[in-house]
Amino acid sequence: MSTLRSAPFRQQHQSMRKCIEAMRKHFNPLLLPAKAKEVRLQLTQLFGELAQYLQATGKDLYPALAEAPDPAARAEAARFSAEFKQMLPRLAEFNRRWSSPEAIRAQASLFLKEANELLTWLERRFAAESSGLLPLLDRLDAASATPAKVQLARI
Image (cartoon, rainbow, N blue to C red; front, side, top):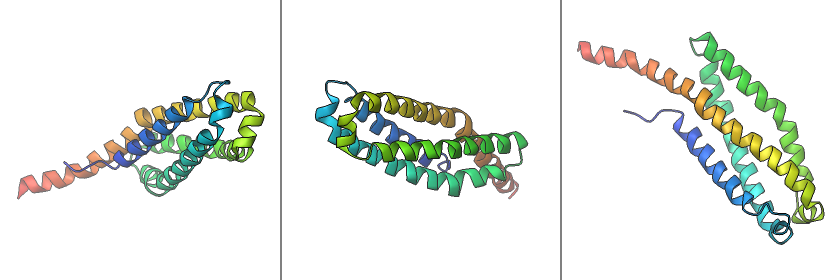
């Protein structure tokens, strides 16, 4: 069986979760000032991976689901896409506000509050995509593979 198109998205989720996990290890008000540089580097990595992920979903996930025969699948994909588009300005503002270790150190408590909110949202988003959106893509793949199997059986 061929790999489903959702596999790369699931791998990207896992990679971003690992980055979040590594960052959260430093989310202690006493440790954060000394680890601000590491946290900022991890944020840079996370936002870089997130940008690649958004590019891939815009190219391969949402267009495929927008053409799905199931109207419920199309509506779900549109809902997920709109939700992320609404969150993009907040993500960009967060990244801009905490663009340096010095900024993180200067307002560590505020950074921790905002980072926890944002990272929790991302983790929930990845879980929702993994359980709700990506299975739609898998079903679309399975449905498109079925006619080929039927044709081979007739030969």
